[in-house]
Length: 126
Image 1 (cartoon, rainbow, N blue to C red):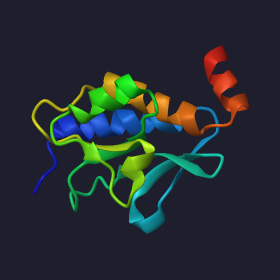
Image 2: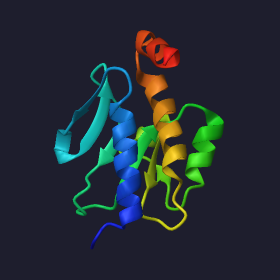
Image 3: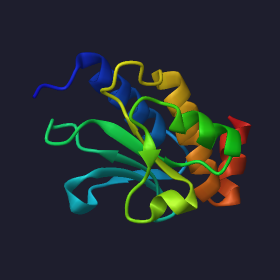
């Protein structure tokens, strides 16, 4: 099934934003795109080839952001026990999926939880 253009556009914006953060790198463990900082994943981007519904998985420690993310259509705590640590999977193809801007805010939140303080300071200086 083809990925809706709007979902793909959002995914591309989120990926570009994530990789633009200080020290961010992209890797492909399990064939899936992830953004890492300091060798630690801060956002799972999944695959954009249509083999799996497009979505992002991020770590939200802020209770308000976490609760808000879970109200997104189809959102759920991440699998493999990651949900217990604040990881949330947010599908991008659902009707009413969050806007790219909000998702980028959440990516930044996830980054701030995982990045070393030095890089967060660099981000704040921008």
